[in-house]
Image (cartoon, rainbow, N blue to C red):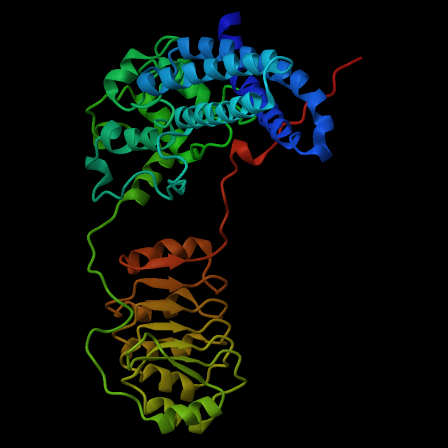
Length: 464
Protein backbone atom coordinates (compact mmCIF):
# COMPACT_ATOMS: atom_id res chain seq x y z
CA UNK A 1 0.00 0.00 0.00
CA UNK A 2 1.32 3.42 -0.95
CA UNK A 3 2.33 5.82 1.81
CA UNK A 4 0.47 9.09 2.35
CA UNK A 5 3.60 10.98 1.23
CA UNK A 6 3.61 9.14 -2.13
CA UNK A 7 -0.10 9.80 -2.63
CA UNK A 8 0.32 13.52 -1.83
CA UNK A 9 3.19 13.70 -4.32
CA UNK A 10 1.00 12.24 -7.05
CA UNK A 11 -1.49 15.06 -6.48
CA UNK A 12 1.01 17.55 -7.93
CA UNK A 13 -0.39 17.37 -11.52
CA UNK A 14 -3.81 18.23 -10.05
CA UNK A 15 -2.68 21.11 -7.85
CA UNK A 16 -0.19 22.68 -10.24
CA UNK A 17 -2.81 23.79 -12.77
CA UNK A 18 -4.86 25.72 -10.21
CA UNK A 19 -2.34 28.46 -9.34
CA UNK A 20 -1.38 28.83 -13.00
CA UNK A 21 -4.95 29.53 -14.06
CA UNK A 22 -5.81 31.69 -11.05
CA UNK A 23 -2.64 33.80 -11.22
CA UNK A 24 -2.91 34.37 -14.98
CA UNK A 25 -6.44 35.63 -14.40
CA UNK A 26 -5.17 37.82 -11.52
CA UNK A 27 -2.52 39.38 -13.77
CA UNK A 28 -5.16 40.02 -16.43
CA UNK A 29 -7.39 41.74 -13.84
CA UNK A 30 -4.42 43.79 -12.60
CA UNK A 31 -3.66 45.25 -16.02
CA UNK A 32 -7.27 45.57 -17.17
CA UNK A 33 -8.21 47.52 -14.04
CA UNK A 34 -5.92 50.34 -15.20
CA UNK A 35 -8.69 51.33 -17.58
CA UNK A 36 -11.37 53.42 -15.94
CA UNK A 37 -14.06 51.27 -17.53
CA UNK A 38 -12.78 48.20 -15.64
CA UNK A 39 -11.61 49.86 -12.43
CA UNK A 40 -14.14 47.80 -10.47
CA UNK A 41 -11.95 44.72 -10.96
CA UNK A 42 -9.54 46.08 -8.33
CA UNK A 43 -11.61 44.56 -5.53
CA UNK A 44 -11.14 41.08 -7.02
CA UNK A 45 -7.35 41.24 -7.35
CA UNK A 46 -6.34 40.72 -3.71
CA UNK A 47 -8.68 37.71 -3.14
CA UNK A 48 -7.41 36.23 -6.42
CA UNK A 49 -3.81 36.60 -5.24
CA UNK A 50 -4.80 34.84 -2.00
CA UNK A 51 -6.29 31.86 -3.87
CA UNK A 52 -3.24 31.76 -6.15
CA UNK A 53 -0.90 31.82 -3.16
CA UNK A 54 -2.70 28.99 -1.32
CA UNK A 55 -2.89 26.74 -4.39
CA UNK A 56 0.72 27.55 -5.28
CA UNK A 57 1.73 26.40 -1.80
CA UNK A 58 -0.13 23.12 -2.33
CA UNK A 59 1.56 22.69 -5.70
CA UNK A 60 5.01 23.37 -4.24
CA UNK A 61 4.58 20.91 -1.37
CA UNK A 62 3.15 18.14 -3.54
CA UNK A 63 5.78 18.78 -6.21
CA UNK A 64 8.58 18.54 -3.68
CA UNK A 65 7.24 15.20 -2.47
CA UNK A 66 6.90 13.93 -6.04
CA UNK A 67 10.48 14.95 -6.84
CA UNK A 68 11.74 13.07 -3.78
CA UNK A 69 10.14 9.87 -5.11
CA UNK A 70 13.00 9.58 -7.62
CA UNK A 71 10.81 9.63 -10.69
CA UNK A 72 12.80 12.46 -12.25
CA UNK A 73 16.24 11.64 -10.90
CA UNK A 74 17.88 11.86 -14.32
CA UNK A 75 16.64 15.42 -14.92
CA UNK A 76 18.26 16.91 -11.82
CA UNK A 77 19.14 20.25 -13.43
CA UNK A 78 15.70 20.77 -14.95
CA UNK A 79 14.05 19.62 -11.73
CA UNK A 80 16.13 22.08 -9.67
CA UNK A 81 15.15 24.99 -11.92
CA UNK A 82 11.47 24.01 -11.99
CA UNK A 83 11.35 23.59 -8.23
CA UNK A 84 12.77 27.03 -7.44
CA UNK A 85 10.70 28.74 -10.11
CA UNK A 86 7.65 27.18 -8.45
CA UNK A 87 8.77 28.56 -5.09
CA UNK A 88 9.27 31.89 -6.84
CA UNK A 89 5.66 31.81 -8.03
CA UNK A 90 4.54 31.20 -4.44
CA UNK A 91 6.60 34.12 -3.08
CA UNK A 92 5.55 36.49 -5.86
CA UNK A 93 1.88 35.68 -5.36
CA UNK A 94 2.29 36.28 -1.62
CA UNK A 95 4.00 39.59 -2.40
CA UNK A 96 1.22 40.55 -4.79
CA UNK A 97 -1.36 39.84 -2.08
CA UNK A 98 0.54 42.02 0.44
CA UNK A 99 1.20 45.00 -1.81
CA UNK A 100 -2.37 45.52 -3.01
CA UNK A 101 -3.22 48.07 -0.32
CA UNK A 102 0.37 49.30 0.08
CA UNK A 103 2.17 49.74 -3.27
CA UNK A 104 1.49 52.12 -6.14
CA UNK A 105 -0.31 50.97 -9.28
CA UNK A 106 2.95 51.19 -11.24
CA UNK A 107 4.74 48.85 -8.83
CA UNK A 108 1.76 46.47 -8.86
CA UNK A 109 1.77 46.39 -12.67
CA UNK A 110 5.51 45.69 -12.81
CA UNK A 111 5.13 43.01 -10.13
CA UNK A 112 2.41 41.34 -12.20
CA UNK A 113 4.73 41.35 -15.24
CA UNK A 114 7.50 39.65 -13.28
CA UNK A 115 5.00 37.09 -11.96
CA UNK A 116 3.85 36.35 -15.51
CA UNK A 117 7.41 35.62 -16.63
CA UNK A 118 8.10 33.34 -13.66
CA UNK A 119 4.79 31.44 -14.05
CA UNK A 120 5.58 30.94 -17.75
CA UNK A 121 9.12 29.72 -17.04
CA UNK A 122 7.94 27.36 -14.28
CA UNK A 123 5.29 25.93 -16.60
CA UNK A 124 7.83 25.46 -19.39
CA UNK A 125 10.27 23.55 -17.21
CA UNK A 126 7.42 21.46 -15.83
CA UNK A 127 6.42 20.59 -19.40
CA UNK A 128 10.04 19.67 -20.15
CA UNK A 129 10.08 17.26 -17.20
CA UNK A 130 6.87 15.61 -18.36
CA UNK A 131 7.24 15.61 -22.15
CA UNK A 132 10.99 15.91 -22.71
CA UNK A 133 13.24 18.66 -23.98
CA UNK A 134 12.11 20.41 -27.14
CA UNK A 135 8.48 19.38 -26.66
CA UNK A 136 7.23 22.77 -27.90
CA UNK A 137 8.80 22.57 -31.33
CA UNK A 138 9.22 18.82 -31.82
CA UNK A 139 6.37 17.01 -33.55
CA UNK A 140 4.86 14.12 -31.63
CA UNK A 141 6.21 10.97 -33.27
CA UNK A 142 3.69 8.65 -34.84
CA UNK A 143 3.15 5.32 -33.12
CA UNK A 144 5.35 2.70 -34.78
CA UNK A 145 3.54 0.35 -37.12
CA UNK A 146 6.03 -2.42 -36.50
CA UNK A 147 8.02 -2.58 -33.29
CA UNK A 148 10.22 -5.55 -34.19
CA UNK A 149 12.29 -5.19 -37.33
CA UNK A 150 11.94 -7.92 -39.98
CA UNK A 151 14.50 -10.68 -39.57
CA UNK A 152 15.84 -13.15 -42.10
CA UNK A 153 15.56 -16.21 -39.85
CA UNK A 154 13.29 -16.07 -36.79
CA UNK A 155 14.72 -19.32 -35.43
CA UNK A 156 18.22 -17.85 -35.29
CA UNK A 157 17.07 -14.65 -33.58
CA UNK A 158 18.06 -13.85 -29.97
CA UNK A 159 14.83 -13.88 -27.99
CA UNK A 160 15.65 -10.99 -25.67
CA UNK A 161 17.85 -8.75 -27.82
CA UNK A 162 15.95 -9.02 -31.11
CA UNK A 163 12.38 -9.65 -29.97
CA UNK A 164 11.72 -8.61 -26.35
CA UNK A 165 13.91 -5.51 -25.97
CA UNK A 166 12.52 -3.78 -29.12
CA UNK A 167 9.01 -4.09 -27.64
CA UNK A 168 10.16 -2.63 -24.31
CA UNK A 169 12.00 0.18 -26.12
CA UNK A 170 8.87 1.12 -28.04
CA UNK A 171 6.20 0.77 -25.36
CA UNK A 172 7.97 1.15 -21.99
CA UNK A 173 11.29 3.01 -22.14
CA UNK A 174 9.63 6.41 -22.56
CA UNK A 175 8.69 6.30 -18.86
CA UNK A 176 11.30 3.75 -17.73
CA UNK A 177 14.49 4.72 -19.53
CA UNK A 178 17.54 6.99 -19.39
CA UNK A 179 15.54 10.23 -19.17
CA UNK A 180 12.76 9.18 -16.83
CA UNK A 181 12.34 6.34 -14.33
CA UNK A 182 8.85 6.15 -12.95
CA UNK A 183 8.92 4.00 -9.85
CA UNK A 184 12.74 4.11 -10.07
CA UNK A 185 12.51 1.47 -12.79
CA UNK A 186 14.48 1.27 -16.03
CA UNK A 187 13.66 -1.22 -18.79
CA UNK A 188 16.20 -0.23 -21.44
CA UNK A 189 18.84 -2.81 -20.55
CA UNK A 190 19.01 -6.29 -19.04
CA UNK A 191 21.00 -5.07 -16.02
CA UNK A 192 18.21 -2.66 -15.08
CA UNK A 193 15.58 -5.33 -15.63
CA UNK A 194 17.36 -7.54 -13.14
CA UNK A 195 17.66 -4.69 -10.64
CA UNK A 196 13.94 -3.81 -10.69
CA UNK A 197 12.41 -0.65 -9.25
CA UNK A 198 11.30 0.86 -5.97
CA UNK A 199 8.89 -2.04 -5.41
CA UNK A 200 11.49 -4.72 -6.10
CA UNK A 201 12.11 -7.04 -9.04
CA UNK A 202 9.65 -6.86 -11.93
CA UNK A 203 9.83 -10.43 -13.16
CA UNK A 204 10.62 -13.93 -12.00
CA UNK A 205 12.26 -15.92 -14.77
CA UNK A 206 10.15 -18.99 -15.47
CA UNK A 207 7.08 -17.63 -13.68
CA UNK A 208 5.20 -15.05 -15.73
CA UNK A 209 2.09 -15.17 -13.55
CA UNK A 210 4.15 -14.11 -10.52
CA UNK A 211 6.00 -11.35 -12.38
CA UNK A 212 4.99 -7.73 -11.86
CA UNK A 213 5.85 -6.91 -15.48
CA UNK A 214 3.38 -9.51 -16.74
CA UNK A 215 0.70 -8.44 -14.26
CA UNK A 216 0.87 -4.78 -15.25
CA UNK A 217 0.65 -5.34 -19.02
CA UNK A 218 -2.25 -7.79 -18.67
CA UNK A 219 -4.38 -5.72 -16.30
CA UNK A 220 -7.72 -4.41 -17.54
CA UNK A 221 -6.90 -1.23 -19.53
CA UNK A 222 -9.31 0.69 -17.30
CA UNK A 223 -7.31 -0.16 -14.19
CA UNK A 224 -5.07 2.61 -12.84
CA UNK A 225 -2.00 0.37 -12.66
CA UNK A 226 -2.30 -0.94 -16.23
CA UNK A 227 0.88 -0.38 -18.21
CA UNK A 228 1.46 1.44 -20.44
CA UNK A 229 -0.81 4.06 -18.85
CA UNK A 230 -3.91 5.42 -20.52
CA UNK A 231 -3.08 7.54 -23.55
CA UNK A 232 0.10 5.62 -24.40
CA UNK A 233 0.31 2.94 -27.13
CA UNK A 234 -0.63 -0.38 -25.54
CA UNK A 235 1.12 -3.67 -26.15
CA UNK A 236 -0.51 -5.80 -28.82
CA UNK A 237 -1.79 -9.28 -28.08
CA UNK A 238 1.23 -10.75 -29.90
CA UNK A 239 3.66 -8.63 -27.88
CA UNK A 240 2.05 -9.75 -24.62
CA UNK A 241 2.27 -13.38 -25.77
CA UNK A 242 5.94 -12.85 -26.64
CA UNK A 243 6.86 -11.46 -23.21
CA UNK A 244 4.84 -14.19 -21.47
CA UNK A 245 6.60 -16.87 -23.53
CA UNK A 246 10.00 -15.32 -22.86
CA UNK A 247 9.50 -15.27 -19.09
CA UNK A 248 7.85 -18.68 -18.81
CA UNK A 249 10.53 -20.28 -20.99
CA UNK A 250 13.29 -19.03 -18.69
CA UNK A 251 15.06 -17.83 -21.84
CA UNK A 252 17.22 -15.25 -20.10
CA UNK A 253 19.37 -12.88 -22.13
CA UNK A 254 21.26 -14.89 -24.75
CA UNK A 255 18.97 -17.75 -25.73
CA UNK A 256 17.97 -18.12 -29.37
CA UNK A 257 14.45 -18.89 -30.54
CA UNK A 258 15.38 -22.32 -31.91
CA UNK A 259 16.53 -23.43 -28.44
CA UNK A 260 13.02 -23.06 -26.97
CA UNK A 261 9.75 -24.92 -27.33
CA UNK A 262 7.37 -22.76 -29.34
CA UNK A 263 3.57 -22.81 -28.90
CA UNK A 264 1.65 -22.62 -32.18
CA UNK A 265 0.63 -18.93 -31.81
CA UNK A 266 4.26 -17.96 -31.15
CA UNK A 267 5.50 -20.09 -34.05
CA UNK A 268 3.07 -18.48 -36.49
CA UNK A 269 3.89 -14.98 -35.25
CA UNK A 270 7.63 -15.59 -35.54
CA UNK A 271 7.18 -16.74 -39.11
CA UNK A 272 5.34 -13.52 -39.93
CA UNK A 273 8.41 -11.53 -38.80
CA UNK A 274 10.68 -13.19 -41.29
CA UNK A 275 11.69 -11.07 -44.24
CA UNK A 276 13.17 -13.42 -46.84
CA UNK A 277 15.71 -11.87 -49.16
CA UNK A 278 13.82 -11.37 -52.40
CA UNK A 279 14.58 -9.66 -55.64
CA UNK A 280 12.93 -6.26 -55.56
CA UNK A 281 10.66 -5.84 -58.55
CA UNK A 282 8.97 -2.74 -59.78
CA UNK A 283 5.51 -2.74 -61.34
CA UNK A 284 6.98 -0.40 -63.96
CA UNK A 285 9.59 -2.00 -66.26
CA UNK A 286 13.01 -0.37 -66.41
CA UNK A 287 13.31 -0.91 -70.17
CA UNK A 288 12.06 2.19 -72.03
CA UNK A 289 9.28 1.85 -74.59
CA UNK A 290 8.17 3.93 -77.54
CA UNK A 291 5.19 6.21 -77.06
CA UNK A 292 1.79 4.90 -78.12
CA UNK A 293 0.04 6.48 -81.07
CA UNK A 294 -2.21 9.32 -79.91
CA UNK A 295 -4.86 8.25 -82.43
CA UNK A 296 -5.16 4.79 -80.88
CA UNK A 297 -5.38 6.23 -77.33
CA UNK A 298 -8.06 8.70 -78.44
CA UNK A 299 -10.09 5.94 -80.08
CA UNK A 300 -9.96 3.75 -76.96
CA UNK A 301 -10.98 6.66 -74.73
CA UNK A 302 -13.89 7.44 -77.06
CA UNK A 303 -15.01 3.81 -76.64
CA UNK A 304 -15.01 4.14 -72.83
CA UNK A 305 -11.53 2.79 -71.97
CA UNK A 306 -9.61 5.05 -69.59
CA UNK A 307 -5.96 5.30 -70.67
CA UNK A 308 -3.44 7.19 -68.52
CA UNK A 309 0.35 7.08 -68.06
CA UNK A 310 1.46 5.04 -65.05
CA UNK A 311 3.97 7.74 -64.07
CA UNK A 312 5.16 11.16 -65.13
CA UNK A 313 7.45 11.10 -68.15
CA UNK A 314 6.66 7.44 -68.80
CA UNK A 315 5.32 5.91 -72.01
CA UNK A 316 3.91 2.91 -70.12
CA UNK A 317 0.14 3.02 -69.74
CA UNK A 318 -2.64 1.94 -67.42
CA UNK A 319 -5.92 0.86 -69.01
CA UNK A 320 -9.23 0.68 -67.14
CA UNK A 321 -12.32 -1.07 -68.52
CA UNK A 322 -14.20 -1.16 -65.21
CA UNK A 323 -17.98 -1.58 -65.56
CA UNK A 324 -17.91 -1.67 -69.35
CA UNK A 325 -20.86 -3.79 -70.49
CA UNK A 326 -18.74 -5.53 -73.11
CA UNK A 327 -15.56 -5.23 -75.16
CA UNK A 328 -16.29 -4.64 -78.82
CA UNK A 329 -14.15 -6.02 -81.65
CA UNK A 330 -12.74 -2.55 -82.33
CA UNK A 331 -11.68 -2.14 -78.69
CA UNK A 332 -10.01 -5.55 -78.76
CA UNK A 333 -8.09 -4.67 -81.92
CA UNK A 334 -6.97 -1.34 -80.50
CA UNK A 335 -5.76 -2.93 -77.26
CA UNK A 336 -3.66 -5.40 -79.20
CA UNK A 337 -1.90 -2.49 -80.88
CA UNK A 338 -0.72 -1.31 -77.44
CA UNK A 339 0.84 -4.61 -76.39
CA UNK A 340 4.15 -3.01 -75.48
CA UNK A 341 2.78 0.04 -73.65
CA UNK A 342 -0.06 -1.26 -71.43
CA UNK A 343 1.36 -2.69 -68.18
CA UNK A 344 -1.61 -2.21 -65.81
CA UNK A 345 -5.11 -3.38 -66.62
CA UNK A 346 -8.33 -2.98 -64.62
CA UNK A 347 -11.18 -5.04 -66.04
CA UNK A 348 -13.38 -5.49 -62.95
CA UNK A 349 -17.02 -6.29 -63.80
CA UNK A 350 -16.17 -6.65 -67.52
CA UNK A 351 -17.82 -9.90 -68.75
CA UNK A 352 -15.16 -12.31 -69.94
CA UNK A 353 -15.24 -13.64 -73.49
CA UNK A 354 -12.65 -15.65 -75.37
CA UNK A 355 -11.81 -12.63 -77.53
CA UNK A 356 -11.16 -10.17 -74.70
CA UNK A 357 -9.26 -12.79 -72.66
CA UNK A 358 -6.97 -13.44 -75.63
CA UNK A 359 -6.52 -9.70 -76.20
CA UNK A 360 -5.50 -9.03 -72.57
CA UNK A 361 -3.28 -12.11 -72.57
CA UNK A 362 -1.41 -10.66 -75.54
CA UNK A 363 -0.27 -7.64 -73.47
CA UNK A 364 3.21 -9.07 -73.03
CA UNK A 365 4.47 -6.40 -70.58
CA UNK A 366 1.47 -6.57 -68.23
CA UNK A 367 2.59 -6.51 -64.58
CA UNK A 368 -0.78 -5.87 -62.92
CA UNK A 369 -4.19 -7.31 -63.80
CA UNK A 370 -7.38 -6.88 -61.80
CA UNK A 371 -10.40 -8.76 -63.18
CA UNK A 372 -12.78 -9.24 -60.25
CA UNK A 373 -16.46 -9.95 -60.87
CA UNK A 374 -15.64 -10.78 -64.48
CA UNK A 375 -17.44 -14.13 -64.81
CA UNK A 376 -14.09 -15.73 -65.53
CA UNK A 377 -14.33 -19.51 -65.57
CA UNK A 378 -11.69 -22.22 -65.47
CA UNK A 379 -11.41 -22.45 -69.25
CA UNK A 380 -9.99 -18.92 -69.50
CA UNK A 381 -7.16 -19.13 -66.98
CA UNK A 382 -4.59 -21.04 -69.09
CA UNK A 383 -4.48 -18.04 -71.45
CA UNK A 384 -2.84 -15.97 -68.70
CA UNK A 385 0.27 -18.17 -68.77
CA UNK A 386 1.64 -15.93 -71.51
CA UNK A 387 1.87 -12.99 -69.05
CA UNK A 388 5.45 -13.68 -67.98
CA UNK A 389 5.86 -10.24 -66.34
CA UNK A 390 2.68 -10.45 -64.24
CA UNK A 391 3.22 -9.68 -60.54
CA UNK A 392 -0.29 -8.83 -59.32
CA UNK A 393 -3.45 -10.78 -60.24
CA UNK A 394 -6.90 -10.22 -58.75
CA UNK A 395 -9.41 -12.97 -59.65
CA UNK A 396 -11.80 -12.39 -56.75
CA UNK A 397 -15.52 -13.06 -57.16
CA UNK A 398 -15.08 -15.33 -60.17
CA UNK A 399 -16.28 -18.95 -60.44
CA UNK A 400 -12.80 -20.48 -60.68
CA UNK A 401 -11.49 -23.61 -58.99
CA UNK A 402 -8.23 -24.63 -57.38
CA UNK A 403 -7.24 -26.96 -60.24
CA UNK A 404 -7.57 -24.15 -62.80
CA UNK A 405 -5.21 -21.98 -60.73
CA UNK A 406 -2.53 -24.64 -60.93
CA UNK A 407 -2.17 -23.70 -64.59
CA UNK A 408 -0.65 -20.36 -63.47
CA UNK A 409 2.25 -21.94 -61.57
CA UNK A 410 4.53 -21.14 -64.46
CA UNK A 411 4.19 -17.37 -63.97
CA UNK A 412 7.74 -16.59 -62.74
CA UNK A 413 7.16 -13.17 -61.15
CA UNK A 414 3.69 -13.52 -59.58
CA UNK A 415 3.81 -12.00 -56.09
CA UNK A 416 0.16 -11.33 -55.17
CA UNK A 417 -2.84 -13.46 -56.03
CA UNK A 418 -6.35 -12.50 -54.81
CA UNK A 419 -8.82 -15.39 -54.83
CA UNK A 420 -11.47 -14.55 -52.24
CA UNK A 421 -15.06 -15.49 -52.97
CA UNK A 422 -14.19 -18.09 -55.61
CA UNK A 423 -14.92 -21.84 -55.73
CA UNK A 424 -11.79 -22.50 -53.70
CA UNK A 425 -12.63 -23.80 -50.22
CA UNK A 426 -10.65 -23.61 -47.01
CA UNK A 427 -9.07 -27.05 -47.12
CA UNK A 428 -7.64 -26.34 -50.59
CA UNK A 429 -5.66 -23.27 -49.55
CA UNK A 430 -2.75 -25.31 -48.19
CA UNK A 431 -2.26 -27.04 -51.55
CA UNK A 432 -2.30 -23.69 -53.32
CA UNK A 433 0.20 -22.22 -50.86
CA UNK A 434 2.52 -25.13 -51.62
CA UNK A 435 2.05 -24.66 -55.37
CA UNK A 436 2.76 -20.91 -55.14
CA UNK A 437 5.55 -20.72 -52.50
CA UNK A 438 6.68 -17.22 -53.53
CA UNK A 439 3.21 -15.73 -53.94
CA UNK A 440 1.06 -14.10 -51.29
CA UNK A 441 -2.42 -15.61 -51.45
CA UNK A 442 -5.27 -13.38 -50.29
CA UNK A 443 -8.41 -15.37 -49.51
CA UNK A 444 -10.38 -12.63 -47.70
CA UNK A 445 -12.59 -13.45 -44.69
CA UNK A 446 -10.42 -11.33 -42.41
CA UNK A 447 -11.06 -11.68 -38.71
CA UNK A 448 -9.41 -9.64 -36.00
CA UNK A 449 -8.50 -11.28 -32.74
CA UNK A 450 -10.51 -10.14 -29.73
CA UNK A 451 -8.36 -8.45 -27.12
CA UNK A 452 -9.14 -7.08 -23.68
CA UNK A 453 -9.25 -3.50 -24.92
CA UNK A 454 -12.16 -4.36 -27.25
CA UNK A 455 -14.53 -4.74 -24.33
CA UNK A 456 -15.60 -2.51 -21.51
CA UNK A 457 -16.32 -4.27 -18.25
CA UNK A 458 -19.71 -3.40 -16.80
CA UNK A 459 -19.95 -3.48 -13.03
CA UNK A 460 -23.17 -3.83 -11.12
CA UNK A 461 -24.24 -0.69 -9.24
CA UNK A 462 -23.48 -0.71 -5.53
CA UNK A 463 -26.22 -2.04 -3.31
CA UNK A 464 -27.78 0.76 -1.29
